[in-house]
Length: 493
Image (cartoon, rainbow, N blue to C red; front, side, top):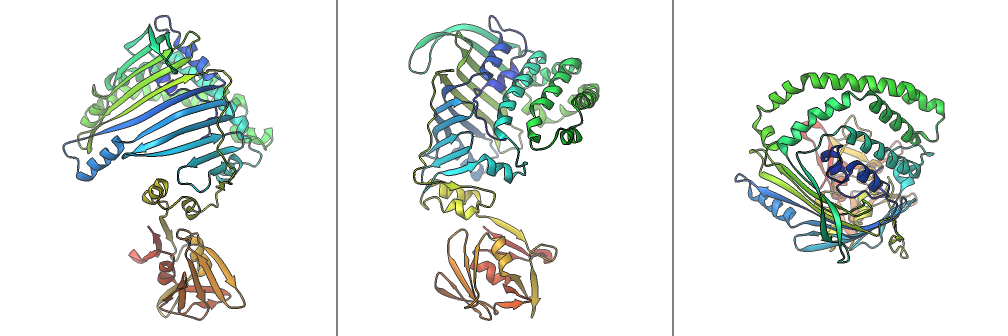
């Protein structure tokens, strides 16, 4: 469900949370928001950066992390939404003086990702994704995407009905440059909010929602209607069997939410006072936590420029005193003739499914490429597999030595296994390194890419299953065995 083939501009959620329902000056914020949710095509760019400020107690490692993060930036040079089902993103992740370019293309079939250093672009089909997360084969992701958009509009409208305005919110007309260098008059919506005011806005918001029975029931009905496509492939009776009828779902949902809100509001003041006894809570929801945002709307009420700074003060015991998120974006060609940029797949793609192993993905990148190094650092090769007495892996003990079925060892470490019946040899291909390991039944001798290695005992066969000494077999595939507290775990770093 991660797919968003319709673009909402970066501060839409911020506007929902901060702006409230009242018009600001001559700007009808609610209608402007809904109008931007209905955009069919556009082009845009965006930069996103984060700053961590180390505290006095920060360690050397903490400061190194801050330095690395503070030098990083996500830059989207070109985002093109051609339609609700077709979108491309071209940009780069900048870090530590390096630049990692990326090109992403999404259409109704799936997502294609091209990264610098990749031998082939990576392709993930929505059908494969659905199978990986257990969705019904009749599930229609494209239909759901459209329903999500409609439901988002319903949620936005509901929230704007109840959210109080921030104290420092204003709208004025300014002349400012937009993408391409043109200067034009636009309506600027300015918002400033600190942590204390954020807290103060919560109770009136909840109180207003609790009093709106009709609005809440309409939203629950919209949820039922728009998310029914999740159950495509099943009968109406099955849908009602899961959620009940629409009327039942709305009635019971409203009752549960209303009771929860009533209970929450009855205890709200007491709970807040209790939380305020904690210095950490007061720091996070204090005056040093701030949001400052400017959104510029053109004469058609489309958001064309946005700038946002979110600063969160952190508790004294944290190694950082605050973090800041900064975002800037521009949009143009709104509802114009936009053509997304497909990724070049003339050289083929790496199709990723739920059976794709980490090594398959890793080997798709040049070993000296930044992505390869980042994947290695991120732990993509790590494995921690329990193979003890109560596992599904087949182990036996002979002469005080633990053996594991070779097919289970291969499964645990994503290795490819081949059996040669005539020579009674087993070939394992290491998923991470691609190294070829050869074992022979009733022999201690093994080879790794042709280099001889000796096992502590023979490879044996018991009741038709071939076994290898556990520790030695795991070692051939770059792993170790941990036996802490008597449990057996294969570990690969």
